[in-house]
Amino acid sequence: MSFTLIRCATSDDTDDLAALLADYLRESYAGHDGSTSEQLRRDVLSDKSLHRVLLAEVMERSVGFVAWDTVYDMHWAMSGAQIADLYVVPSHRGLGVALSLIARTAADARAEGCAFLRGGAYDRESTRRSYGRIAVVEPCDETHLSGRAFRRLAELADLPTREILLSLHPIEWNFEA
Image (tube, rainbow, N blue to C red; front, side, top):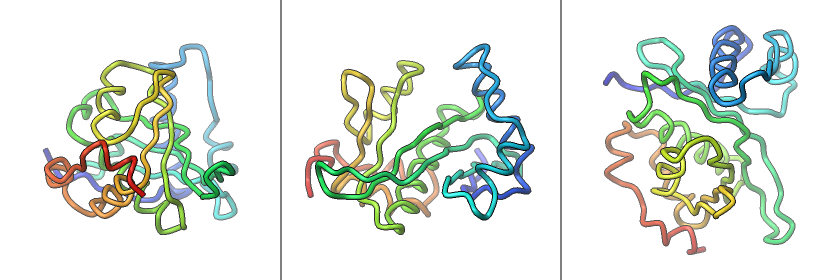
């Protein structure tokens, strides 16, 4: 597989993001229209937006995205990142694109002072298994990447996918400070 480039989406990426979002919603949330291109440009991809979107590209073609926001956990008194959506086109699943997106999210979130990543694995068993290789997946499918595991994955973000896979941390690292 060609190298996967993970980068911040900009307003120039509105049409690509809208197309990926439409595919994602058709597959996982049939009948839900989601955001329009104009709404994405205004609310998500503008310079004033607090939302973050990363695009995955292979050979200059957008093949996936992750959308995330910062959150604060009052119980643990720390900031983290909440993944709202993660999608990879079917032709690029199983190739580590999602892992590369998550690693870059962890790195970017850590650079902003975050100490954990959380999200959900609601759509399919393969997603749960994939997340379960790096994070703690609760019975309700809420997923947490934290502690030493969060820091390790953030450190791997600039590596090729194969090297990330070969350098993954033990799940127990999620329970270490």
